[in-house]
Length: 322
Image 1 (cartoon, helix red, strand yellow):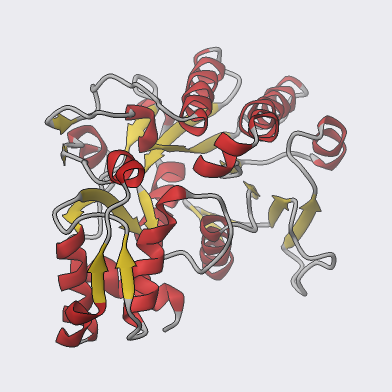
Image 2: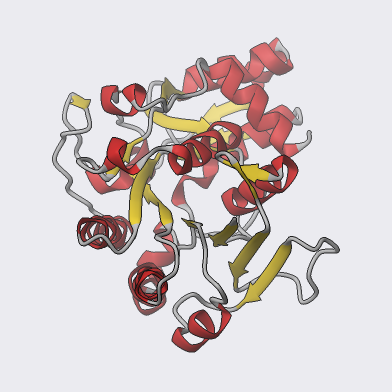
């Protein structure tokens, strides 16, 4: 079995690659190769026979075609230009989030047409497709209303994946992810990065100025939980997802005050005295007014969230290694 991970140098991509490599298998089969595609991969491959690197942009038509080899059984398409970065550079976000997605889907289609295997494609989408303002509750049938270029482009990706699946060219499933915690410090252009900063700084006993009010609510999951759900998505039979290719993943809803309480539970009560709130109206509008999230379809399919906020925080701190 051969696996491709795009965006493999990113936070989620690295965690997914480590998990698959450590397991040595995916679903019920052994993994022969894990191909990692990203612009920022190391020049030299890791010293293991099953890791293969493709260094470059997935929007590069020639690179994708010449590097495809014998093809892939599973494709985890994680690469993207996220939120704030997409707003600042439309051309780059278009090339990666739309054109790059088309390159991957077309290459998967050509693989099948050459007589190769029909690949499973797991596409990382975003809950940002729901936009704002949000209704009093969100479920899997809620209308989408993206208010950012990144979210609009992800919605296009969902539609393309569903159409390629409908035509039988691949077996796709799009997962709408909430915030993923806790990311290491990096200039990724993600406007929601302050949530990771909050856990990291408070977890290390530092002070932190929260850019949202204590009662502002958001949705998030730990990197451990997100990798669990990505791998579970790959394990699902096509019959289970053929009528609903887009799945909103379960996530925990919590306020900033509840997040601070959870960090204090894990790291000590003095954490609360280290927080000051200075709400940023834009961030609060985008990330601080999330209503109840209901995901019965995803839960019936076997997806889940972290269980409670202290567990999410403990997993996030473990991932950060602090």
